[in-house]
Length: 407
Ligand SMILES: Cc1cc2nc3c(=O)[nH]c(=O)nc-3n(C[C@H](O)[C@H](O)[C@H](O)COP(=O)(O)OP(=O)(O)OC[C@H]3O[C@@H](n4cnc5c(N)ncnc54)[C@H](O)[C@@H]3O)c2cc1C
Image (cartoon, rainbow, N blue to C red):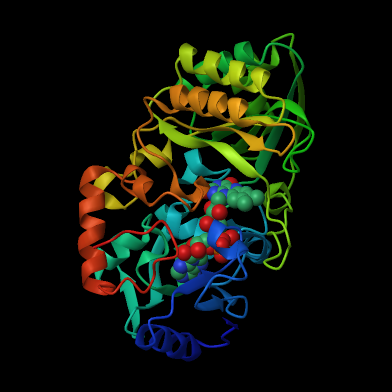
């Protein structure tokens, strides 16, 4: 059963009904999360697509719980503002923010949750509650990284940043990806926080990028020479071709629609995972490059962290691993006919070597089927604290179709 509420009161009535009738709830914002793809999930599906208001008052921005980041970036551009979000326009403010939110400005401005200053939430009892550092601060703490476990957020309040302009660097990699990664890693160790980079190496079948290895860099500023100077060691490599441009921030968010819920076949399975790492050592780079070479339908993907992300104290939000300097993802698509049982086992074993040494898993890029993995998505003290918040606000576990924190 699916419902598309048009008001907070309607959301509240739907949650009350789910609670009274013990109906499992699916909450859909942008629809990119793994629980949103299954139209046959039992219970009640609440789609927030009518709650998309975006209001700007100075640098304070209030966003409806069903808005997408592309709409937010477009609305804020008119005011010379931006919020660090993710890299894709159609991703929902709801799912991305509640899980943390690693985007193009993560080193300049931190995670999406680091810009969150308040939220309106419909709790498991159907009550509408305002949260902030001053109102139910422990619930507000849990919303910043603890996912959709505590209620339905109908309004997010952010403190936006004045956008200084951006410079975008594209570095096509035609040779030794390992050498490029090593130099990029060394650059990022001392780089100004204005610089955030991603590296990816993907096969032709992945719609998120052109096939092959590439590195993209965003400079939070308007002067292309500043990006050129800091990235000079990467651009100087024979394997690399540099292209610099000065697009609008909203235009660097990729267009990638969420999968249709009614699509007969979902995306292919993915064997692999992600991790937040304190360091990317040579050994890890070697493993990643070897993984990509061994499996034709595999991807490797890295994002730099540090800067403003690392300024936030570990216990200030529920997000784990503030000491991480890189986010790493690797895996292979499980394509029938291409991947057999032996290959599956080999991919799993290689991934396990890669993930060893990670500080935590980032839930927003994790699949839905592993409740036993949830504690590994948080710092130990943070997980205990999240369980206490869950016990207070959702003791019956009404909100369980997520990386579920059980009280
Ligand atoms: C193409 C693509 C690009 C991505 N890029 C990035 C990126 O750059 N950075 C990054 O950090 N992550 C990224 N992600 C991961 C993304 O953050 C998660 O998939 C996220 O859960 C998607 O949010 P959504 O609102 O679109 O999905 P949904 O499926 O609508 O929501 C995911 C879950 O969040 C909860 N939820 C959503 N909205 C609410 C709400 N208002 N109140 C309460 N609970 C809610 C629900 O539990 C829901 O199941 C990307 C994912 C994809 C598929």
